[in-house]
Structure formats: structure tokens, C-alpha cells
Amino acid sequence: MSEPVAVIGAGPYGLSTAAHLRARGIPVRVFGDPMVSWRAHMPKGMLLKSTPAASNIDAPQRGHDLVDYCDAAGIRRLVTDEDIVPVETFVAYGEWFRQQLVPGVERVRVVSVERRGAGGDLARPLGPPHTSPAFDRRPGFELKLDSGEQFTARAVVVATGLSGLSRLPRELARAVPDGPSATGPVSHSAQHHDLSRFAGRDLIVVGAGQSALETAVLAAEAGARVRVVARGRGAVAFGEPPWRQPRFRPESPFGRAWSLYAISYHADPYRHLPPQARHFLVRRVLGPLGAWWLRERYAGAVRTSEVRGIRAARVHEGRPVLTVETLGGRVAEFTADHVIAATGYQVDLAALDFLGHALRARLATSRGTPRLGAGYSSSLPGLYFTGMLGGSSYGPVMRFVCGTRFASPRLAGHVAGVWG
Image (tube, rainbow, N blue to C red):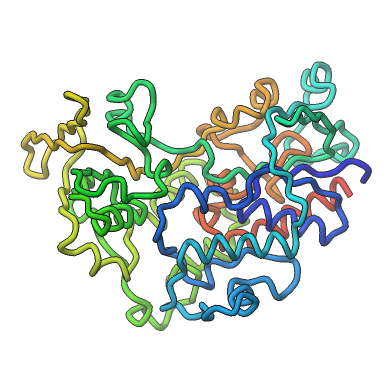
């Protein structure tokens, strides 16, 4: 293969995919700021909800798990389900993984990806997705970098993680027509690394997942007065510690349950489910739940308001005001100095603006997400999506680092089989 495979993104999925491709002798160029989402868009002091076993970045050979990094760095081994992984340790692990297996990551941004000869190639029918025997002879892709360089890649792997996918509820979005901002009245949790700036201030955190609850705790511990607003009775809940997990169910990176075992180790059949079922399971399985070790820190430090929903949001004299419907059906207002929406992420191909419009228009999609076939291949020959971008096709495991164990060898195997 004279032309390289381009991997866009240098987080866990990008690094893992690149390592597997290189192990097969496939030339690869990797673009991005390594581990940037974890290093710059997660709060200082954060602890991973995932256990050490669920925090391994998959490699094509032994010796590159989190525990191997601990041994190499001379720090305490993180092994058992009761060991908690600091985000700083995980970022350092990712950097060590990169140095060991993916040297030469190019810290530049891909600004454009187009099919080579797009004018004629995109005008011709491609036939049934994922099945055409002519895939290995079709033109590659033209990429432009913000450095000014242009080059051709035989295949492209999009592994951009959470970048650009922050989700803001409509009610909050209406209050900030220019978009959420860390310095404005409303922001998204991904816009904060240092929560100490809220010391002495009134803060509302919207959401009930681990991101919301841990953001609230870290802000409270930094001196903020924090209220969590969550939708639904009993919305704020915490998982059980490892020693209370059921014994007679199969183990998975997420706990002991048949459903968790299935999505962790048998993700391939998931893509054959009806679209409604796939999207429903992505939303509901492994849904909002705080980590077991966060419960004590949360209690007494954070006020909780469980509501039926947020009716509206506005800004009054520079301060955000939320109008909510209480569980009892009344209308109430909450005012603060700032609102953080810890409301997760939503895959939307429109956010991947580096993919050319004509290219995106030709992609088979399902509710704005790429519809993937075997080996994480899209309906355009040579274009692959992995990580969270593959969640609607391969299931909830793709939202977590441990999904690299399933995704990376299969994606690399498909590239080698079709393009090698």
C-alpha cells in the first residue's frame, strides 16, 4: 500500500487503531493533539468511573495495559475493581502508550477530507454498502491540513471522540443564542478544567450522570454553593460497590449482568438490530448513574432538586434563571451565578465539518449517525468511524475506553483485508 491510512484523532480509539494498523505493516499517519479531551476538557481532580480493567487501551501485543504503565512509571498498581483511576494517571498512561506504539503523531488539524476525484466518483452509484468486491480499487481521499499540506490517503479512520459533540438541551440553548461559554451564564461541562473559579459562587449543574455528579462534587469541594437539577424522581442515584455485585452472573468491564456481558463482548450482532432498538439501547443501557465511591462525597455537599423538567431558561441581569416544573406539578425558579449543563454528548455528522459536504451527503446514516458495516466501515469505501461515532451501530460499549478491545483489531483487520 503506497498511500497511508489517515487516522483523525489521537485519543484512546485513535491511538489503539493506529497501533493495530502499524502492527499489520500498514503505513499510518495520525493527526491530533494526543489525549486532549481527557487532558483539557475533564475537570482537575476527576476520578474515572471505569475500573482499571475497563480503562485499558487495546494494543496488538501484550505489555501495554494500565497496570503495565503503573509498573513502568513506578507508581502503585491499579488492578482491582476497588482501585480508582485518577484522570491525570489515565492521561499519562495514554501518553506512554503513544510513545511506545504510536510515535510521530502529527499535532495538526485536518481541515478537509474529500473523495479523490469527487466530481465523478461521487456521482456514480456505489452499490450495496460494505459488499462490493471493487472497494479495493476505488480512489482514496484528499486531505488538507491546517499546516497547508495536502496529501492522499488510501483510507480514513475518524476517531475524533467527543470533540464538537457536546449536547445542550433546547431550553438552555435558547438562553444563550451565541452558544455556551465557560465565561458566560451557561456552559457545558466539557468547557471546564479548573472548577475552582466557582469558589464562593452559586452554581447549578444540570444532569444526573457521573459527569454531572462529579462536577458538582468537585465544584463544592472547591468552595462553590452547588445545586444539581435532575429530571425524574430518583434520578440521582449511585452504583453498588464491587463487593455487592451479584456473584452468579458473568463479569463485564461494567459489572456483573448478562446484558452488560453481551454488549461488551458480542457487539457485532448489535448492528443487525432494528434501528429503533439500537438507538434505544444506546440511550438506556449504562445510563446516568454515579460511581459508588462518589456517594459519600456528594451527600451533604450538594443540594439536589429532582424535577419533571426544565420549562425555560433566561438570563436576568447577567444571571441565569431556570424555570422548572417540580415533581408535584408546581412551577419554580432557580437562580445562580452560572449553569453548567452536564448533559452529555450527541453524535451528529454535521458537527464533523472537516468531512466535505458532498462526502457527508453520500454517507448512509441513521438519525444523524453513520451507519456502519463489518469492521466499522461506512457506506463510502475506505471511510471508517470508531469510538463514540460507532455507538449507534455497535452499541453502548463504544462510549468507553474498553471498547477499543473490540473495535480496533476488527477495524484494522478490515482495512488490511480490503486495502492491504
